Amino acid sequence: MLKKLLTTLFIWSLCTIHAQAAPEPEMEEGASANPKYQVEMVIFETLALRGWTEEYWRPNPEIIDFEEAEMPPEELLPEQFMLSEQVAKMTPEKGYRILKHSSWILEGKPEEEAVPLIIEVLPEESHQSRVEGTLTFYKSRFAHVQLHLELERKIPERLLAAFAQNQHTEEAFLPEFWRFELKESRKIKSGELHYFDHPIYGVLMQIQYQGE
Image (cartoon, rainbow, N blue to C red):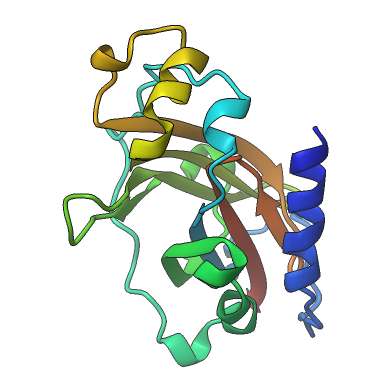
């Protein structure tokens, strides 16, 4: 879709990085120590309204499995963040609202040992968006991230009629909030910036190898 391509190109134009990453080793047989990474995530809303009516949105996204998930470790301090420069450019005037910017030191455990981390954005006001889901980070031959997120966002009043028509329902049957799913798994190298695309919201992620 042309809109997604343009959005992706714009985000990447914001996010030029000159990372000086330590060499990232491949997983070797018999290796016992798990490598450590700084893992950084930025969740943002897209303020453009066209995404609401350009696609059909399932009313009941897949249920997120929190049974084995745990809370993330203590977050790093803002002065340790890797993506502050990029986030500073993603302003409401540019069409973005930052919902969460977090960074942690995580072990690159084997996939079968990796535990999903609970990701939450709790609104301060009743009209604001809510995010919940999981982030799973693991290391096989390469590092991988798995995201399963849901954004619960209030349907804009000016779009109620158009959104109802797009969803093939009556306006009176619409809930106040709608849930949007983002689910993706991706290989990610140290120093690379990744953009997880969605018409309503998105995620920027970068990892940095820290050693063993």
